[in-house]
Image (cartoon, rainbow, N blue to C red; front, side, top):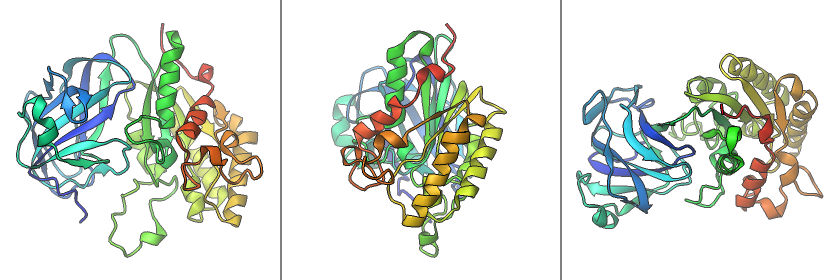
Length: 368
């Protein structure tokens, strides 16, 4: 079993908030664990710098208790925490992992979080945090999300996808994933255009399957890149409180692992049908260039042609992510100006262009 070796340590994990409010809740998950996980002394605080938090951190309780145990497969939401937070700011979530090993997490968070040596350091003074948290990780562990409870009605749009929604290739700790840029656009637009943006991207995720043929027999956990998108849709999309809109950007990894375009299209159609049972609006996007064999280029072109020509029969609108990032000489490869360097993932400017391709006036917005 692959674990994070975090038992007996204190974790301070940093998350970037896309909404502000007067209260929040912390969501924890032991979805893939085979043993109970016990945490104590949970708190939240506004980040000052690195692992240092502003004075005034608040305790996080579960049914009024400072210690919580997550059984294998269990997910829990904390009691509301009375704490004012602003949109586009960083929140530190701190806890001591009393016992149990972490196997549930988010591999590529594009965000540095902090870990101590063995021991409970939750009561350490803020000024000592740089010394108390000598270890760093770019993954999140046991945290499934943060619910911000706004003071007035605020709708949310969910970005559902794989590594290009997760933000792989963007600058670490800079919050330059395309959902981050979209959140800033909506906040700048103001008025009824403002919406929270929830990032439901998982690096390496596929829409139709969770199997990675190259990993067969290696001992790597099957869920390393998430369950199949059609399966995780149930908890990563359909159960999100306050979400009214969905932007779908997934399918590239299916094509790269040999899934036929017809299968991807059929899965997208089924996804839309399921999403409409919960969402007011569902939007499609074209699949980005880069990283395909000659045959896969043909399959990708088929999917994108369907999205562009027939997508409006299924989606409320289609946003073209691919064209702005494609090379003028060859639409199947990245424009070097927007390539992070691997030929598959955008750089910061590429992610900005993806967000710019979203017609925000098509989104539901929020009540006045």
